[in-house]
Amino acid sequence: MKHTDIKEIISSDKYIGQQVTVCGWVRTSRNSKSVAFIELNDGTSLKNIQIVVEKGEGEYKEPRVGMSLKATGNIVEGRNHTKEINALPSHITILGDCPTDYPLQKKGHTLEFMRSIPHLRSRSNTFNAVWRVRSVLAAALHEYFQKNNYVYINTPLITGSDCEGAGEMFQVTTVGYNAEYKSEEEYCTNDFFGRKAGLSVSGQLEGEMAATAMGKIYTFGPSFRAENSNTPKHLAEFWHIEPEVAFAELDDVIEIAEDMLKYVIRRLLDTCPDEINFFDAHFEKGLKARLEELISHDFGRVTYTEAIKLLQESGENFVYPVEWGCDLQTEHERYISEKVFKKAVFVTDYPKEIKSFYMKQNPDGKTVAAVDLLVPGVGEIIGGSEREADYDKLIAAMNERNMNLDLYSDYLDLRKYGSVPHGGFGLGFERLIMYTTGMANIRDVILFPRTVGSIR
Ligand code: 4AD
Image 1 (cartoon, rainbow, N blue to C red):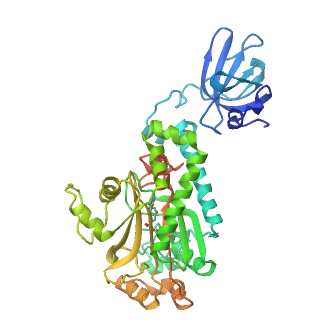
Image 2: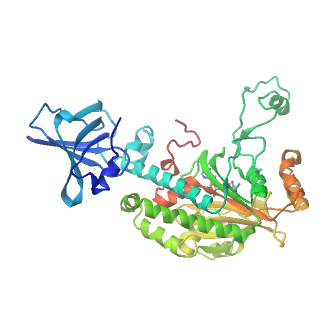
Image 3: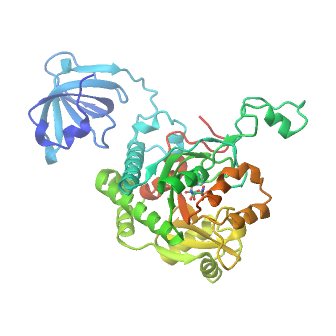
């Protein structure tokens, strides 16, 4: 259907005086004796275009909110340099009717209500803005890595090993469990792959294999977590960006994470000013200033041990008690980033017991070269580490965790054949979007959220 994007028309003077055809959905419609006004939105911009209909000629049937239509007319300059379309009734074609039970008749629905209509919520300004930010950030991430000599790789979504060793994996099976199987092993042997398989929680282990050949790689794809976390920041299916770099130590990993985030946020501010102003006005006052501040200052940095001390000396009444060795909870993460540093902060060198087997063991024998990035409002958005490159130390860490070494023989080979210091991190894409839009619930930054007890 030949037509022009509304975004093109409103952002350029070259269409003034020209005839154009636009298509879209009716946001509002007003009718007076001689003229009618239709606000049309085609999704290409937060802004609508106004169609001014001269009712003198031909029969005019007022369109209803939500209807889709096509209109042809001349572009004229309206008040405040806006663009309008002057159209005759005969040049307006209704493409799809919309009865009055259309749920988006009026503005101001709650986000909870919008979650109950995921198939329609994209037609609101809020979700239009979120999906555009999502798209621009995705492009900016690819751009950053491509410019810096990273190779984009695709790691398997179905895996035979659980990357984190945490076991919170969705099982992939084509045979229903049958009580006749004598053991889990027998059941899995009869399954599609002949052994237990699941949806990958991370592409890191395969990413390491590619990085120790290509030097610098990144993945950008879905990860799956079967953890029973019904919180505003956990999804069962989320999008994960995982760069992995050879010849890199923990400090290099931290430098890359900061550089990457600053790049993509700068890109976002340049590309989506309308969307950022919208979120600033409606969801988080001061969002734009906060993002501008982020890209112009160094991120904070603190060790886990120092962070524990800060929390213990805070005088705050935390729900989860703080002692060396505990996992940092969201309330702790937010205190560190919001109250102490008031900005993004890297926390490094966590106790080895609360981190994964593959992290490089520090000389103190107690901590590993891990890093999490905490940001105000969200908490952790990045988790990474330098990897253990020493074959014997890695085997010892796996044995301490009673892991089945046979399942990781490929991974262990990397430490046998030309091992190098290397590291990387995982960025949760939805958490980045929460941080850059001020949206407080992760269910509102992905088109169809999958969370515990909910799929649609
Ligand atoms: O800290 P995580 O679990 O680290 C890994 O998976 C490593 N293999 C990454 C690596 O080093 N290559 O996850 C990384 C990030 C978290 O910081 C968080 O932003 C996001 O992934 N994430 C989730 N996002 C939404 N819902 C969940 N259930 C998430 N779990 C992790």
